[in-house]
Amino acid sequence: MSGRSGWLWPVARAVAARPRLWPTAVAQAARLAPPGWWRRWPPLPTPDRAYLEFRVRTAYGDPGRPVDPADVVTWLRWCRAEERRRRGAG
Image (cartoon, rainbow, N blue to C red; front, side, top):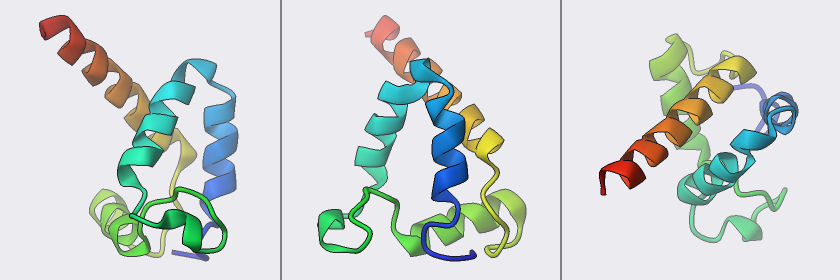
């Protein structure tokens, strides 16, 4: 992966354009952020680098490939739908 947060701004722009996904994005950031994330620079609740590299490798076959913002939006839509499904099934 190129840079610790090189993927962050394109993904943030893609999510910012979709207000319905904001609560889901915040919830997922909280779930994926490692403990003590605020002690690292930049103090953003981003996933652990090893976890992110693993996810990029499994998604694209190359841990150095940039994260595609459209894929993150698709994933957040799926997370949102699953959360709604779980709440409806409860």
